[in-house]
Image (cartoon, rainbow, N blue to C red; front, side, top):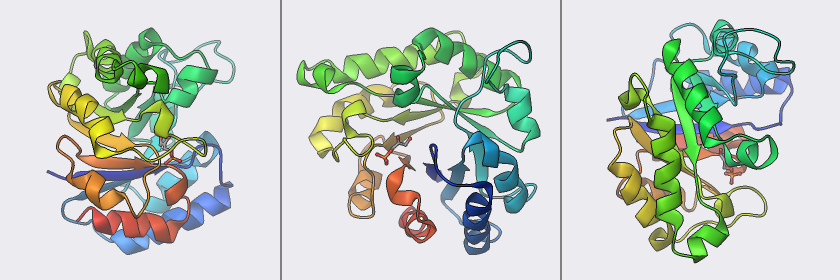
Length: 241
Ligand SMILES: O=C(CO)COP(=O)(O)O
């Protein structure tokens, strides 16, 4: 089974920066790397240029960071899954903790968006993760399991869904890298669900990626800051081999 190694650019990079990055990845990956499924999730403005640079049928997948559950309509500022697909996306990231915290994403909207992605044949990448308070209260695994079950509930094909376990306390410049024993319980809980694969994300870098990839229940890495430099991303992809 392939290891998924990918990055979200979050709200960084112009179209030309994203295109240069994608071109480097495409050149390095060639026709594909056995055992690794790389993916890039740029800002919405750069999705089509990244997908076009990677080319049709590319072994590197392109994703969007969010998409609406409705196929079209009066939803100012949103993009739909069909629009994402039209731009070349094959993955739809859903429910990142930054969206749950700042943009009112809930378990219900995550479930609706997951259904929309599946309805149109795109792969949902559903992010779940507990707060520091939940972790400290010993509720981390329960929170994560509940978020993932809510996303998968009633889906036509839960086995097509990717889950990214991203503890809120580990993400971003205010986050810190996890210790193995802090993330093992949630990983064990997620391993019982019928998802396609479980990725870990949150302060991943070249130092901790080797042991994270060896943790039971981890089938890939979802990387932010440490992968925004393309050479670092390619080093991470090589670690997935
Ligand atoms: O949020 C993340 C990926 O979605 C992880 O971000 P960082 O790797 O910057 O902590």
